[in-house]
Image (cartoon, rainbow, N blue to C red; front, top):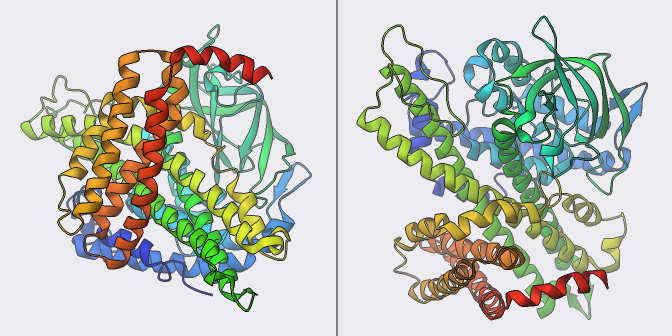
Amino acid sequence: MPNFYTDNPDLVAQLERLDLTRIVAWREDDYAQARDFAYAPRDHEDARDSYRRALEIVGDIAGDFVAPRAEDVDRAGSILADGDVCYAPGIAESLERLRQADFMGITLPRAYGGLNFPITVSVMIVEMVSRADPSLMNIFGLQDIAETLNKFASDEMKDAYLPRFASGEVTGSMALTEPEAGSDLQNVQLRATEQPDGTWRLNGVKRFITNGCGQVSLVLARSEEGTTDARGLSMFLYERDEHMRIRRLEDKLGIHGSPTCELQFDDAPALLVGERRRGLTTYVMSLMNGARLAIAAQAQGIAEAACRAAVKYAGERVQFGAPIATLTPVAAMLADMKVSLEAARALLYETALIVDLKEGLEHRIAQLAAANAAPGVTAPTADAGGAPPAGPGAAPTAELKDLRAELKRFNRLASLYTPLAKACCTEMANQVAYDSLQVHGGSGYMRDFAVERHARDARITNIYEGTTQLQVVAAIGGVLSGTLAGRLDEYDAGDYARTPELLARVRHARARLQAAVDHVRALDDTRYRDFHSRRLVDMAIDVACGYLLLRDAQGDARKLLVARHFVAAMAGRVEGAAATVLGGDPGQLDELATLAAD
C-alpha cells in the first residue's frame, strides 16, 4: 500500500510552504526545551525534520495498516454487549498501532508525554488517518479533549489525566448534545449538583455522543439552579464508572466503526473543569473550534480517498473502445474534483496556521506576563481570549502590548476562518464523493467498491460539530465586519507578477463580494442578511481560496493550472451570487413562509 504522506505532493507542499517559524519557536520556548527533553528540536530545521519524519510514519501506518482494514471495520461496526462497547477489530488494532508509535498526544506538552507538535501538523495527521478510515479518526482525533484540559484545567487535574491521554491509556468523548439540546447547547438540562466534599454529581441524558464509551468525558451540565441560559452551564470531567450507563448505540448511515452512544448519568461523580458558569461560553467554544478544524481535516481525507478512487476507476473502465477518463465530460468531472480538493486544502491549512499563531501568541503572552509579575505575585489567570489581563505585578512591556494587540486580531481571524474551513471542506467532500460515485456508475452503488462507503461517510461531516448553516452563522459576522477584508488586503499585497490576468479576475470577484457586503450592510435588514448569509459566506470562501491558490502558483507550474481552472469557475459563481444579493428585495422574504408551507 502507498504511504499516505509521500504519495500526496500537495500535502507535502503544504508543510514546506507554511511559515511556522514563530509558531515553532514559541511552542519550543525558543528551543530551550531541548535542554530537558532529548527528542526536542534544537532549532527550526530540526523541528521541521521531526515533523516530516512523523508525517511519513503516520502516512505509512495509514496506508499500510489502517486503510486495508477500513472495509471490514465498516461492515463489522461497533457492538454494545453487557453495557459496554466493543470496537470493530480493525479499530482496536489501528488504535494500538498508533499508540505504539506514540501519536496519542500530538499537541500535548512533552511534560505530559506529548509530542508538542503544532496544530498544523496535527491536522495533517488527521487528514491522512481520515483518508484511510474516517471512523478511526473519530476516536483517535478526539485529542482536543486533552488539549482543552491542558488549556483550562488545574495543574492537579492535568497531572492526573494528561499523561494517560498521551500514552493512549484512555480515550475521551465530548458529552454535549442532549435529546432537546442539539445545536442549541444553551438549552442543556443535564444537572450537576455540588457535594459537601467539593465533588459534583451528574444526572441526566446525553445523546449522539461520539465515542461515548471513552474512559474520560468532558460533560456540559447545568450547575446553577434556576438558570435557563448559557450562564448556568459548567464543564465537568467524568471518568467512567458504574454510575453511567450506555443505553444504546445509534444505527447510522456511515462512519460505522465509530460508536455513537446515548448515555444515562445517574448520580455520576465528576470534577469541575476551570470555573463555574464558563462551560459553554469559554470551554465548549474552545473545544468546538478545535473539533471543527478536525472535522474539516476528516472531510478532506474522505474527499482525497474518493477522488483517487474516481481517477483509478476512470482510467481502468473501458467504454466505446477507450478508458472513460478520456471522455471530455468525465475528464471535466475529475478536474473539478481535484481542483476543489486542492482549493479546500489551501483554506484548511491557512486556517490551521492562523489557529497555531493564535495559540502561540497566548502561550507567549502568558510567559511574558509571568516573567513580568512582581516577586511573590502569582501571574494572572488567562481571560476568555487567552491573554492574561494586565494588573498588579504584571505591568505590560512594549512587547507584551504588541502581542496582545496581535492576539486580538488572530482571535478574530480564527473565529472567522474555522467555520469557513469547516463549511468549505465538508461541503466539498460531499460533492467530491457524490461525483466519484457518479464516475463509477452503477458499480459505485454496489458495496464492491469503496466509493459507496466514502459517500456515506462524507455525509455526516457537514452535520456534526455544527451544520454548515451554523458555520455560516458563525462566519457571517467576520465577513460583514471587515475581518475578512483585512486578511484579503494582506493576500492582495503579495507578489503575483507571474499571474497578472488571474490576479485581475480574483480582484474583480473580490469587488463583487464587497459590493454585496456593502449592500447588505446598507439595508440593515436582519432577515435579508440571514437569507443571503450562505451566499456571502460561499463568496468569501471562493475569493479567499482564489488568493491562496494564486499565491501557491507563483513558483509551481502545476498549481498554476489548478489556480487557472479554479478562478475561471469561481468568477462565475461569485458573479451570480453577487447579482442575486444586489438584485434582491427584502419585501420578497414575506413569501418564504408561504413557499415553505406549500
